[in-house]
Amino acid sequence: MKIIVDKDIPFIMGHFPEGVDVEYLRGDEIDVRSLRGAGALIVRTRTKCNEHLLKGSEVRLVATATIGKDHIDEEWCEKNGIVVRNAPGCNAPGVAQYLFSSLFQTGFDPKKDVLGIIGYGNVGRQVAEWAKTLGIKSLVSDILREEAGYRDTDYKGLEEVLRNSDAVTLHVPLTFSGDKVKYPTYRMIGEKELGMMKTGALLVNSSRGGVVDESALKASLLTGRVRGVVDVWENEPNIDSELLSLVEIGTPHIAGYSYEGKKRATLMVLKALEEELGIKCDISGLECETDREKELSANLITQSYDPSRDYEALKRNVKGFESLRNEYKYRHEPFFI
Image (cartoon, rainbow, N blue to C red):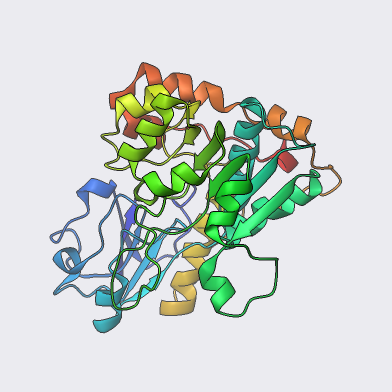
């Protein structure tokens, strides 16, 4: 079988069995022609996997080494017999590391400030767990899980969380209006929602750029109504340089870019090949054993990562957004330093 693989997926080379024809390409090189004869496609977020790319191909599995799937037309794939697999939770500790490092660097006081968490999937739950360990009070909103009957936390309404939090962090997928989408997240945070937040509160977006209305955010930042930490942007890699200049911290979509998180993602897509297509890969060296003897603390987190360095690098080279991301030196998560 032929497999097309994004060459910038870390740690993936050398794990495929003999007899499998693997072609490594950059994400922007993957096109209709390159997919001829391929039965599986392994990508990152930069490859749009839709009818235009996949129609007429022999692809039966699209596996993305990311938690997000908004670059994949899942409905079209399902109708055409193509299985879609992602890597849920692979980057949750890395995103939590990014979030709390940013919070502490921007003056968040764990003893008295309240953290609002929007979205309670793998990443949101990791953030809430770390907040509890650090003694931080948190409020959680996730309308889909609440309506589905989950009782794993005390869910609050979005407005209640926005009004009562000193910092709000977003951990939702990017979804748009459609038959199967009851609560689309596209621009779920706009002028109205920003106006609900405490004056001077911090909004952190490490989910997807389109979740926040950037024009509304810029207006709120200019007046000092709110402060911002932004890792994900609309129109990446051509980001809004004015917005970048207004935030407390701005980074090139690397919140989850930990060494261990990238290993987990690669492990998950290789396991998907075996589970869906029977292709057994060598996964040695990809499993991460956490050193749980270390206690999570604010000092451990801030020592493990300084987001201001990534902010300075992006400000110096805004047009190099994609290269900064592709050539990023993966940081170790707190338990692995």
